[in-house]
Image (cartoon, rainbow, N blue to C red; front, side):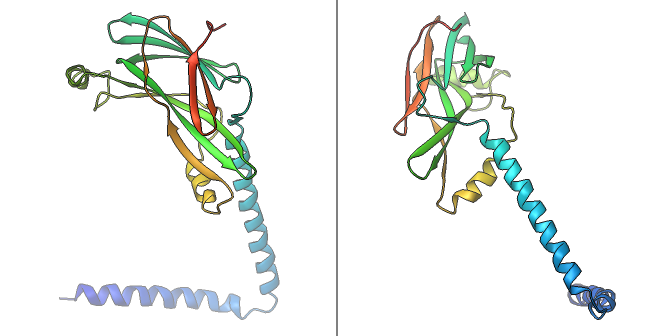
Length: 211
């Protein structure tokens, strides 16, 4: 019986020798190096161009947090006890509607800090939570609420989500990428809120009705 360890050692050696046998005619052929370098450089530039396009597309959903207009406005309507219809008006004029359950809500946001104190952000989701343990346990048994009694309504974005790529770029220390959650706010019928982000903190205040 053949030892498996021997197979694991010999098989890579055979594959390497086969690849070397295929590569040898190309390596010893005259005039191959310069075209290969040109092709590799072209592919590298193409990949960098694609990365730049993705980042530009992604950053298109962000807005300067220092603007006077709110990042979003939220209005709540009680459908039945602990069940709420929420209207969200974003900074770009888009309006979304969601159904949340619980006693309090909050906002999740992506924040990018660039050099020279330039900060941009975008609203990601609305969260829900019960304040009483008994209600939370009851919510876990409700199929409409996720495990743990908390669920987020994600805001649809018109761009590709490249958060992982942005976090990778943040390692260069040129940009700081964070995901932040606002304090929990009470759910009240007819309540209206404006959402801003100032000096690294959420600023959520009562607002006029959504138009």
